[in-house]
Image (cartoon, rainbow, N blue to C red):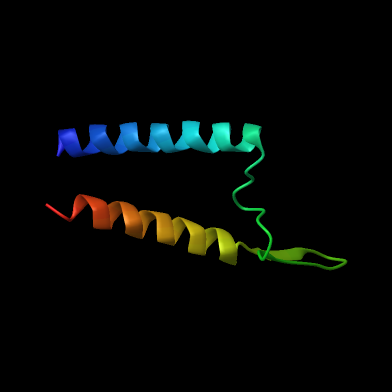
Length: 69
């Protein structure tokens, strides 16, 4: 269980570093074209549908690569 937590922490750290680097080179995950944003007088609604689809496709591809043993 301890190793799983350590590997999970390392993975989260790596994903955080990638997110920061992507932001610096101009890839703004969470603000892609197609994400839904509705703002009114008293608040707003934001749903990053395209970001969710992109992340899902990337994770599916990664799992497919590692599952091909």
